[in-house]
Image (cartoon, rainbow, N blue to C red; front, side, top):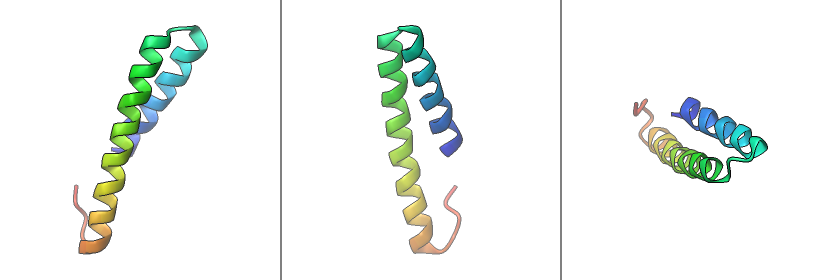
Length: 53
């Protein structure tokens, strides 16, 4: 999950540099959502003491 977040962040940065504002905003939004999902799963796994995924 964190791997996909990093991929979308890099995609957003590259799209922003090249001037594709809409694509950069979309990729950044997807990266933000994936990051928060990753954080929630990580916290659940810490609480349960097991690997969630």
